[in-house]
Length: 263
Length: 320
Ligand SMILES: Nc1ncnc2c1ncn2[C@@H]1O[C@H](COP(=O)(O)OP(=O)(O)OP(=O)(O)O)[C@@H](O)[C@H]1O
Ligand SMILES: [Mg+2]
Image (cartoon, rainbow over all chains, first blue to last red; front, top):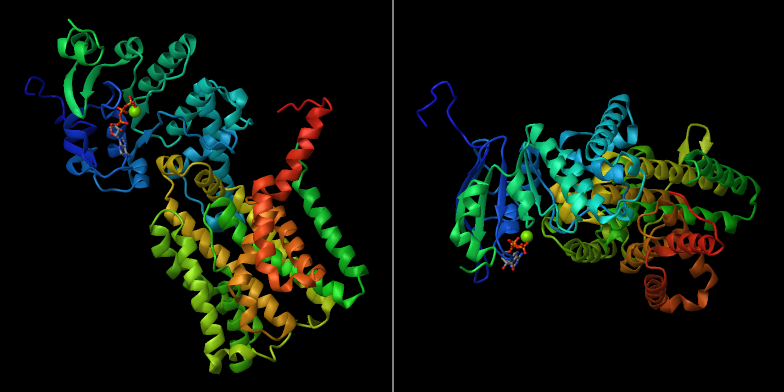
């Protein structure tokens, strides 16, 4: 902490302090405290039911934690509405892809721009130049993001007609459309084949290079270990271990609890 | 792939002009005018049901608010109808806001229940506040509309007026759907969970659409009152609300042209089936059940799907 005095005072992008969440009698999260510094890829692993998705739901404001605090950019966000949190710069994808299925591929990404744009009812009806300009900006941005994830040729298709692997990419493009500082990815490789998983790894690298901080929930160990700077292991709502990929791989508790390899 | 919009609107305007010009029969013109008024009602509600995924079982009340407000202001207070129109809409919008805000805060179908109760209360007010509304015997002597040298007391002119308003509303709804707001609405319809996750304030948007649909309902009520010059509470009762919901369901939710079809069918049906008058509610219930089971996406969408299927069957490939 005192080694480098030129560095400004360290403050993590995201920080949770003793966050707990129960469902009935089940403690899905107990006293979770962790920090995500800006610019890293934070891996989040753990067996089924460990509470990974719940942690995402709590961070994004979908669930209110029972106790504890969550701060983003140094501000408390616990209790804020989802749309306020998205606007502050947190975006997410879902474990079970949640697209707007009746809408086209590009429209899905255009909806993603919602928090960065303004026009409403009167704008829609009047179509004044300002609104048309914004509409064009939204479309350009969506096209740019589709190209970024490699779906530019699919833009006019109905999103539900895309193969599953591409639906995952589309969901990432939609999340990027809100210009997030922090992107929470819930098992983005689930259901992908080996080639698609490798491409996803490259895409995540590109996203990190844009300066976007990633939290990656993933069961695909080789992907997680390769791309994460840091890994947090959850088990039954508690933090089991944390450290670099190398440390995690050699952690006995993790090995037995998570990887199911008994010594 | 899809027909250019300008062609569709061009066809619509031509049809209205031809019908208005050539139909001489007063009764037909009247039925066609009612179809227009009902289309407005269905259009507003369609945005709420089809796009925002919420149901209103009390929309008859907004129809009534539009009609009674203009009746009272023009007859009792000698307002110009063109001044009473914004008053009627403003009242409907305010009431919709007050009903919608608490009910939309709760997720699920609370708006349906809230509006059901509200519709009943409004109906009781229309019927019992005799000194203001004329009570069960109704309100007579509502003046016809005039704009400069054009008098809308002729059935033909009123037909044109109503359908011009319908056209404007079709355009408004069409533009809304193809906008940032419309995309957000459709997003809510597809997945509310994802809509919230991309930062759409779903409650705010639903409230806006509810208020919009109430305003369109009041506009329809205004046109209705100045057309037949006599209104009574029965026109705005629970059955009227159910009728509107049926129009939207038949027409196919989330389709602005479907609203027109649903309105046309439900305006014509009672004219054709006088014998069923006592069983109207049952007939609507049956129609809704049949449509929901056979063509869950409504008649318009259902027919289009059948058409597309037939196309595939004959080997016509479709390239997206
Ligand atoms: N809305 C909810 N209501 C009740 N219980 C819930 C709810 N959401 C999650 N849970 C429970 O909380 C626990 C943690 O679930 P969570 O989905 O966070 O696990 P996960 O780590 O994401 O697991 P997986 O790897 O299977 O996705 C589970 O036991 C789950 O059943
Ligand atoms: Mg999960």
